[in-house]
Length: 306
Image (cartoon, rainbow, N blue to C red; front, side):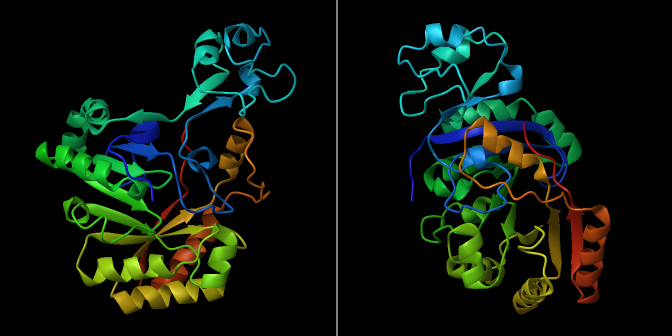
């Protein structure tokens, strides 16, 4: 478990409408303890910052090579030798077309909060606020505890998006400060969950039960990924779990394949699944299935972040 007062943030997305009520700013943290086969933000998985390479923007001036003090620029193929790169940002500053971009920077709670205040008027007028996403924001309990204090002092609504692997003890003080918790359920079978995400789901299910039993403002979500999470057996088990917890709603998130393009910009090892984005018709079909079980669904095909 990573714990520090500063935390690595790789994007602050303004005017978001899919991550909670109203107009929101969504903060994306780097670092995740799952490795989902369908991960939409592969650049978020590792904690450390890195330089991404957007090949289509590169005109091969190689001013980056002249600026790099570590000889980490490769002139053929992928541009960055990560073994040599120290993320000094000299190459980023030298690139005239923005083909090299830093992914992730360490921010203090105060620094991040100043960014969020820029849109406070929109939060107030729309009933919106700030959503903490990732990656996995629960890796940073001390940072988040301070961030929630800052937001609550200014009356800013806060939402947490989590994969559910957090430690209850380390989050004991922060959880009560949240106004909304989006909690992902992916695969209910432990073996299948481990195969698809790299981790079993016993703690996830334990935490889901804990939040529901203690009346935290939790709403469960299901990413619908063809061949991984949308089979009838998994849907049945999720419906039974929600019924066990007395929950009567679920957010359905349709898979989109646009996240696969991000694998190339970081030379990532994640396998490309080659799946089509989830269709609106298929999403509606599964929504009706849940509704027949007495579970209201909210359906979204999420947009990829920049």
